[in-house]
Length: 391
Image 1 (cartoon, helix red, strand yellow):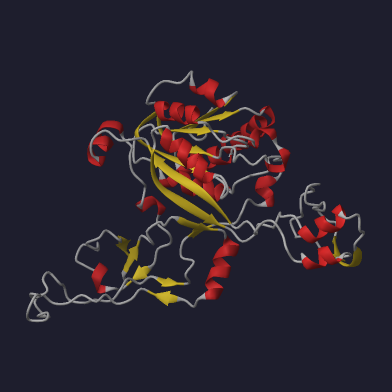
Image 2 (cartoon, rainbow, N blue to C red):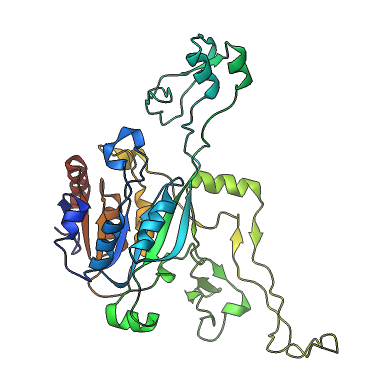
């Protein structure tokens, strides 16, 4: 199946079984949103993290230098990292996807005590649920979407003592592990031999501005550090901010900007060669210092990282999967590990409803292969991918 000359396929079956049919050194990269080991919403498929054996098979089918991105949970990503590392992958980094729209899921200890003691709590009012609704969950007493939450007060002294205590913090971030299959020789050698083994920094830069900064205005219109994309007549266009290992949703970005005013890159503190003679005893003259110049024309709030909203209602329409990732996030992550040339193949085990696959095709991957055990999610993913073919 193709999407504007890009191809995709989903294997319906167990990940380990499907990997056994694949050849060594076949893929240039890997993205997975695997089970978190939490039994989320009592889903059986979320009970166990990918085993070391699975991670070893993933290593086998990827080329040397291939990059791996793996979503995880704050509670269990350390175990996922151990499985990936024990299988032979090299952990390179851990991205933090911060978001402001999560809702608390902890148990109200005061309510639990009253229930245990057989005491009925007094209702004193109601409050609306969140605008996107709250999923029903009998363990925590969540209300279905559209129904108001009842506000109650403790009925026993014991419950009064524990009023305001819970069992969990509001979820506000998810880790994305970054790993690499050990390369053959140097990064340069691996790139020439296997065509992968690096991060697409230029393609993942954040924003971009027109600048009149003398540091980036030389005769050719390019800066010495490669930050210039082209000329505008009034100045040059910078390629944007170097991608960071922090990712935000739009709510988290707004909250972060509210905490601190806008700022601008500072003037560098470089000195002329031999302009400072030290203390005259143990220190000699400072060397190789250049004339100080202004900083880059990079200004704005502290949220100048990549950010996007969580999956929208439109992206969730007709999608029953409970952990849908936003397509823009998936596209950005797929771009980050996209090799520069060749027929680039990406593997997406635990492909779920297809968000990572759709994002990868939008990012420019030439062939994306997914593996998913649950037939209902395969059907959803195929429908979403087919819509790209029709576009």
